[in-house]
Length: 482
Image (tube, rainbow, N blue to C red):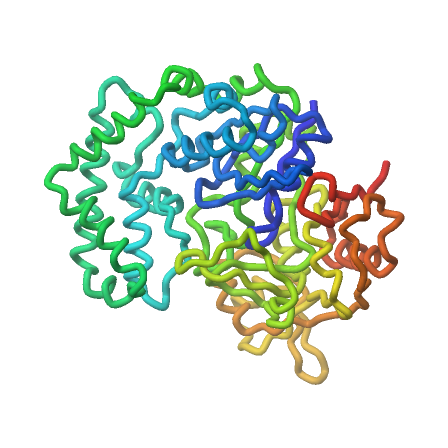
């Protein structure tokens, strides 16, 4: 039995989907377990034939027809979006939706995103103005925020499929009151901070969800949607309660698919621009009884990137000018994707939390045209040293007075506050200046490219075993041949 946990080691967008598709096809995988995240994250997979799909809630190995998707109770799901994704994937693969639904298994305790969660997510962001967190506006993170402060605002899959709709109606009523009160209390600030091009759509959402005279109409819409679904019986049959034992009846080789990245984790991420979700490997380990036989794989780009708001020590406009990603859409909620150099300090920090066995490196081919490539190996700190700083960082003070941070030795809520006072300290290496996208064997990689990979291993402290030089599963190179 082969079991793998895949997790993002940066701030997201590391290429997890492509590597899961690669592993699924090379390791005879029959089970993809979505162990965190929600519909706000999409993992792009492009097949060798050129079919592109952004996996939002389905497992990213579903192009392999024997592969099943298991959605755990640690994932927040949007059931209507899930049905849309099934329809879209069916059209792309010519696999009938009923056949796909037989391969989907959802834990009955999954929390569900409603239109209320999506609206309050947007309203809360707009109420904060320039200090907003940077959410993408899908309501996924908001679900976890609300249930932490008020458990009665949490709706689970089992509430929707229950024969008695009492829990569903009660929750929708509570959510309606909460959204209405929040909007009323923050209306002036929200309207002031809403971009002109979003005003009409946002007002329509507000009118529909708040100014409707009866919340029962919304509840009935939810119930009617699922009762009218032709696959309701099959779908209900997929809902299960005993996760640890259920999935192993149907699958032998599994990938635990993580979403987002460690640097935006609810606990360990760099505040304040983090999610309210768990993006570590912890839940995957907790639900697997094969911990001694599981391989933890960290996913990282060969450089760094970040969407929208948030601290980004190695961001460099010169990198952004030479790298683009057509699969990353820009919007007010998503923000613009930004690029910078590989940050070995933050990679070591992510490794301190996730303790992965190996690193898979994506987008190596994006560096083909760089004459010089940089790696951040330390920080120069320009702020004040206090007792908390001493606890968080490993550092030295040079004879010339420079304060050099070599590592982060413990997580802390104030980590971002200190990192704002840091400048990256780089080493520079010569680029390979050639197209590596057609290379399939490690022996054919340019010398400068293999040297760069070795340096990333050295400074991150994590062995790199697979690199990606293109978008499909055929563009992966095993560089640790056994």
